[in-house]
Length: 425
Image (tube, rainbow, N blue to C red; front, side, top):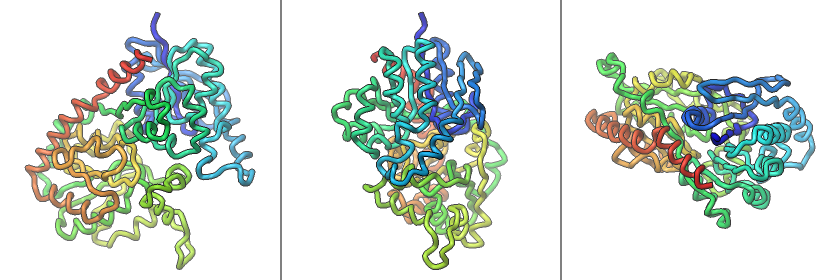
């Protein structure tokens, strides 16, 4: 009998399977389509908008179940009107009430389908619900952020005791959990995010780009304070003065992440905590500007002409941006392990990234790119100028990065490792 494996997507975000645009959706889609060859695979994910009936679709051997969340959203609106019920360590999204009916609906489906292994992304509050209705099921919690080590310890501990495996998307994330919950250290393993190295491949680079004297820098990610786009723009101002023939493409949706998700939890990281300034009114004018509006003020008129905010781009169209770039940059102040770094490496681009979170686990400093102290404008600008001024260095680092991406971060390798942990549950 084939093993039955289910994945539980984050409840607050509709994911357009089978071609998702969000990072966790992409991780899920890449894993499940590879598992489906040998196993029965179901993905539980929120239904779109105000849908009140469960629907299902099948793609590439994977069954996608879309679970309604309308009642959960109504409940959250009511609960959030109660003063003092939540705090920074106990925010609404960490509550057992958060998307409770979604969790119950999934748990019931798991029981009905007699699932053997369930793989839950980020939301630990679903673990006790699933366990109560499925006493023999193997539960995997897959963390893509630091929540387990940042939220209320007692609440998290009560949930983790019911998990069979706790996965971090980088050793940085996994080690944080081991340190916070030493009693569960033997349950903790790292399974990196992956990359499709056939799709993201610089060998199909646009030849017209090589004939262009203008060098292109590329950033891919959410345009939000924790991604450090302001750091990148200030460094770019310095770069332009010494290397005028350069352009910067910023690819990603413009939308500030709620401060409760990262900033309110960052008591031990002043650089992240200080990002609160982007969420507060100007002390002089009293005006509250969006992050994008604040970014515009950082650029001189000359530099602004050389920066393009490209907005959201379908994941299936991102390869063209990597193909036409010369250097990739991740300037984040908080990062578990960004998939665009791996995509850039697979595309044979040298990568310049912050020494934060899981980024140094991907980039080999001075071999596949450069790692700089997060927030250090001079170091970032210096690294970019070294690469812009040395064609051979860019090629050498890019080739080394491509090899590293193929050997360590290909999706086939990632799934192979995940299956090893599944089989030893």
